[in-house]
Image (cartoon, rainbow, N blue to C red):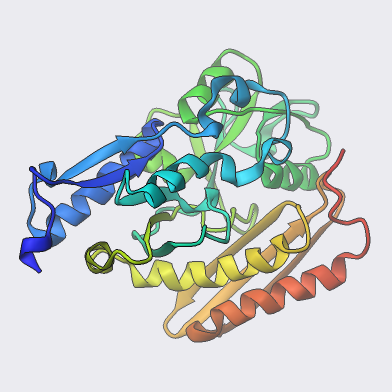
Length: 319
């Protein structure tokens, strides 16, 4: 197999978006692959691909992401590059990934998961509960908006789209009093200077797969499959199998704020799930345990239970 490994003369091409966080994730992937096979970093080439979601005019648009095309905005061009052979693997933030891959592509490699929690970011106050009534919160996340309005309906919410750096610039320009980021992103970018405090998952359940990096490949590429197997984190894969099964069952029926988190304790998997009305007026949640192997089944069953409890009109995202 050694003769089939990439080299500086014939590098393995790693596709990624061009944001600082996306590049940090691609570099982490390269480091892990180089270490696993004792290869120089030059044996891997990072290829930046601009996606529809990276279009600045689109990012600035005052519309929810759902109206602009959803999660596929950030993956379509990268997956096209993978299918055409322009790149060999694609590195993704898993919370941005649709639950189904295009025909011919496989997503079965995950790096060790980072901190799953949301971060409350404000130059003025240190905690969400310290915000005064009427304070302005910036977020483009349907989930975070709904969770916030469910817990603090006295606050104002404005659309706040862009990468980490863009949102921080808007925050410091006074567009909003606070915003939310992912602790995982702040950690991966080593942004210790950001005035952030982690929100416990008991107070704000995170997005499905938050904090996880996934690596996509062509289904028939056996060389890449072998290489990715060497860096795959089994625990993260088990957790995401349950979470993404939960998401898939919900996505098939609705567009709604969805949160979920699977955690492992020995051979036991605990899954928490939540769906909310987009205006935050109602939240339905569940919390169950099962064996790790039964995680995907529990995810589907939990989704069906929440769907049955929601009733007609619950998932209307228009406001």
